[in-house]
Image 1 (spheres, helix red, strand yellow):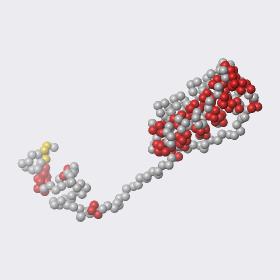
Image 2 (cartoon, one colour; image 1 turned 90 degrees about the vertical axis):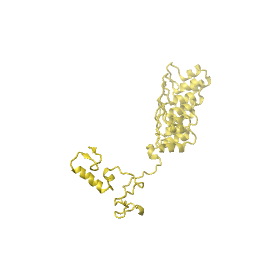
Image 3 (cartoon, helix red, strand yellow; image 1 turned 45 degrees about the vertical axis):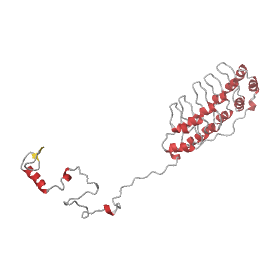
Image 4 (tube, one colour; image 1 turned 90 degrees about the horizontal axis):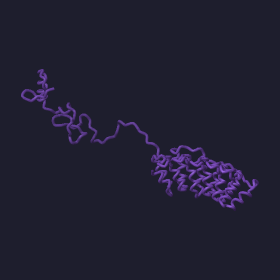
Length: 300
């Protein structure tokens, strides 16, 4: 799909605008269920994400796995501006995959601390559980994600929560061999928690994408003008119309003088004697139609 492909290119702003102006469905799903915004988010294309959102793309459409563009930014990482822009554009938080992993779990699994910070600031549940009962802090302890662990603890994550195996995040870190991280989790105090003091800001209520495109005004259909100015050589009055030598009018619309399909017109210009012969033959009450005595007739 052209729009899906263009969303993955650098400097794609003008291409996306032209395609949408030409009628491309901005939220069209490809065979994998992904929209152009999904593709732009996965390729970390900030300009593509920004342009699509400005034109009215929805940040909450899901692919075949029921995942949103925001979810994919938590996986691919990179510059967190795409994640922040989607959150600012009212992307919903809390969607989970088939294993119950939400955006916050993916960010901690892959060690994307800045994405995690944005998710928490916009209201992600810091102690949410996946299908195994693990919190984001459990995953940080398992995969030795030091920076994400610090973000979670400083923002108020509960370190004493247990997973389905009745293990705390400290115990998970020790079992995984991440002893330094385990000691940091153990020694963290509740007095070290620094909650957010500001409230998140959101984009104004989005309008239709069609209203945000600069489209040329529609041409209005006007009624036909019966008083058209036509060239003098076409302006023939009844007395000035060209005539054939036999006195009948000659059509000026067909310069080649093509034969008319009308039977009545085809008889114009006939020999008057032939016309009288035809009438005389018909008036005798015969059932034939011809040119008089001696001529072959065609049965009706």
